[in-house]
Length: 134
Picture 1 (spheres, one colour):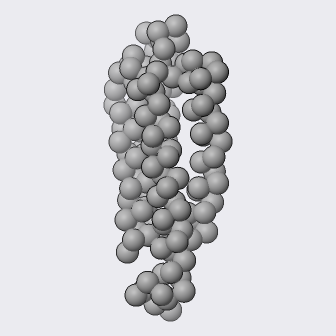
Picture 2 (cartoon, rainbow, N blue to C red; picture 1 turned 45 degrees about the vertical axis):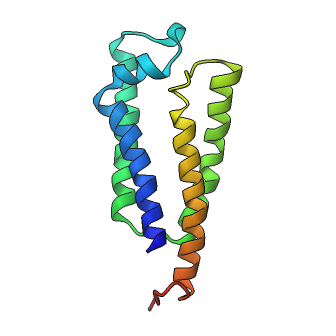
């Protein structure tokens, strides 16, 4: 059950931040990007909404599938380059504002949740967590 809760936490991060980008892309642009990178253009809003729609799609998939310990571990590893992205585009090339670093916060929440989910799923798969797999 703990592994499933971890999946839901990951899903809600994607649904929350992705929904924000999908439904109010200009708001994300205005709040998350430094002024010199903001544009009031259709292409940037469209791109942000596309990013949001993919995040929402993944969030929905995280709600309706059952992750194994391997899935949690893989997702944790896949998140690592996003930390580099956040660091680089906040500190080296300041594109992201402090609000834009909500992406970092979401990634950190998901990474920690992946570790907890991996541990819980391993217990479940071994029949230790009260759930016996047939």
